[in-house]
Structures are given as structure tokens and as C-alpha cells.
Length: 267
Length: 232
Image (cartoon, rainbow over all chains, first blue to last red; front, side, top):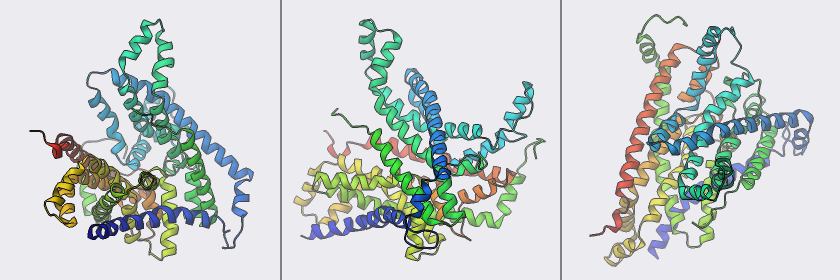
């Protein structure tokens, strides 16, 4: 009896946290999306979201997130594969993971210096004779920096699933006459698809909602859903519209998680 | 600024003479330590709550709710907390930043502590009960010592999450209160300057130090795992 009481007491504080900071905020976002800027109840925000301006923004945000995810994946998969082949793989993995511990802002800030007019990148271009270019504040720099930031997050799950792969399976495939390429796309890739899916999850959703990088690196040339939400909340002060975009971002997130759902098979 | 003449500590000196900056650094550290402390306590209680849930369904539901804040994008957490604090009448500033840091660190602590709890053999608790321990004794003398590596790991994770966070803080910080990330952001929007370089270097060193400490804790965790079922 006494144990039940104390148990309920400490569970209670946790449930309180769930209600106040997990459930309530989502409900509030949905609730606020139903009010226009004057505070009247209406669906005007949803109507506005389906006009050309917002749809175009959503599509371009999708396009950039897709581009970032694909490029990150194309770099991360071979890297993770090579990592599993190296001698001290945990050490190399650690070296790749360390940058992900450094504050995102510091990384963005470092690129401000590298890509700036007098930065390293431009001095290099001058040496090879391409002359000074405007690198910072373009969509190229935005994609480049985002890819750089997401690479460790993509490598980690892929590395783990590649590492768990039983090497005898590969030998068996080769013995049965599969070429290296066939062995890769018939054996290795299907068996590591779970790692790939979680890699896509941790890249695509954050890429949709980046807002600091678009301001610092892309110089407002790229507008992602995250930037739009930040803009509506903190600059325009139109919380209704910001909430509406947030509702759609949540929906997209749920849909994407559902599509890339990794069902754990019994091990 | 771009022609390199030699090494100097001038910008570090300037940084330490900038009182405004020192206050911001102090704010950041206080918020990080307090939020790590509180989120560790609540996260531990949360892990216990999930561990004690009888039905498998309840357990899974609690875990999914727990993970909502980990998977949702920072912008959404920031925006929804902004609405929440405004409605609740919490003035934007120190308390709103602290509360939101505690809120988003709790699930991480839960995820760090829960595996340790799952690892613990239930016969330990039964044995303690048989020997006459009441539930408070069981909690403080059996459970907490056993899961302490998870608790420490959770504390350090919460600390780094709080130090690292920019997006959520940016939404709930209001005027007059600022943490390092927010300050660096507003300075960086004006272009690069040498005192942010000095500041960045310091922040980088602190992060590195935390990572090293965290690494040693997990190293000790791995060695200590299975302590409960010592074979003789």
C-alpha cells in the first residue's frame, strides 16, 4: 500500500511533464492555427497555406531537404562502408562523430569565415585562376554546409547496420557467382536498409526545419518551413499562420516517419 | 582583420573585460547546470514510472510520448513553448529558458536511465524487501546506486544539450536575457569578428572537455555492467 502511494507520487511528476510539455504544446499549436491575425476564429490560415506563395515555399523547402538528404546519403554510405573495412574502426568513427558534438552555430560561423570574400575558399579559387566568387549567401553554400552538418548523423546508423552484417553472407553470395555489384545491391544494401532509413529520418526532417543556417549561410535566399515558422512567430508576429505551417510540418514529419518506419524484426 | 601578423592573446583579454559577455557566459552555465540537475531528477523518476508500468501497452505509449520531444524539430518545440509560456503568463527570460531546457532534456535522461533499470535483476528488489527494507530504502539503497552510471550519463547529456541549444532558446528568450548561442547568433549576423572567434574557441574546448568526461563515464558503465549479478 505504502509502496503504491510513493510509486504514484514519483510517477505523477513525470506524467505532469508529459501533459504540460508534450501534449499541451501540440494542442496549443493546433488551437492557434485556427485563429487569424486579429484573433478571430477562422480557417483563413489553412486557405492561405494552399495559395501559390506558401505551396511554392513548401515545395522548395522539400526540394532542398531532398537534395541535402540525397547528397548526404551518397557521401555517407560509401564512407560508412569504408569505415567498417578499416583497422581501427571505432577510432575513425569517433573522429567523424566529434564534429557533431560541436555547437551548430560554431560550425555555421566557421563557414562564414571560410566562404567569405576574403576566406580560404576564395583564396583557393584565386590560386587556381577562377577569380573571386560570391560563395556565401547562395543556395550552394546552404546545401554544402547542411550536408557537412548532417553527414555524421547519417553515417552513424548506416555504420551500425553495416557493422552488424554477417560477412559470411557476402562470401556466400560471391561463392554462388554474384558479381561484386550484384552482391552489393542484392545482399548488402537490403540488409542495411534499416540503417539507411533511420539515416534519412535524422536528416530529412531537420533539413526541412533548419532556420538558423538559412539566415546565416544562405542569406535569406532559401526559405525552409522552419524559417517560415520563425519568421511568422518572431518577426511578423502572426502566430496563427506560424502555427498552421507548424501543423503541416508535424503532419509531414509523421507521414515521413510512417513511410520510413523501421520495424524491428525479431533478432 | 584579414592580414595575419602574428599570434596574440588580445581578443581573449578583450573577451574577459567585456562584462556583458561575462554575464551571458554565467547565465549559460547556470541554466545548463540547473536544467541538467532538474531534468536528471525528473528523468530518473520518469524512467522509474515507465519501468513500473504494469501493462506493456502503457509502457510503449509512455515511451512514444517520451520520444516526441526528441524527434520533433527544434522550431516546433520553440514555437509551441513560446505559446505555452505566453498563455501561462511566464515572463520570457531566465525562467522560461530554464523551464524549456529542463523540458527538452528530460526525455534524454529517461532514455539513458531506462536501459540500466531494465538491466537490473528484479530479484535484487525482492531480496531487499525480504530483508525488511521499505520502499524508500529500496529506492535509495538499491535502485539508485545500481542505475547511477545511467544517471551520470544522463546528467552530462542534459548539460551538453542545454549548452548546445540554440533554436528553442532563441524562441523563448525574450529581451534582456541571452545565452551564449543566441548571443553568437546575433553577433554572427553582423559578420565575423575576432572576439567571437575567441569565444568560439573557448566554447569548443568546454564541449570537448564534456565529451571526454562523458566518454569516460560510458567506459566505466560498460565495465560496471553486470555488477548486480556478480558470478563468484
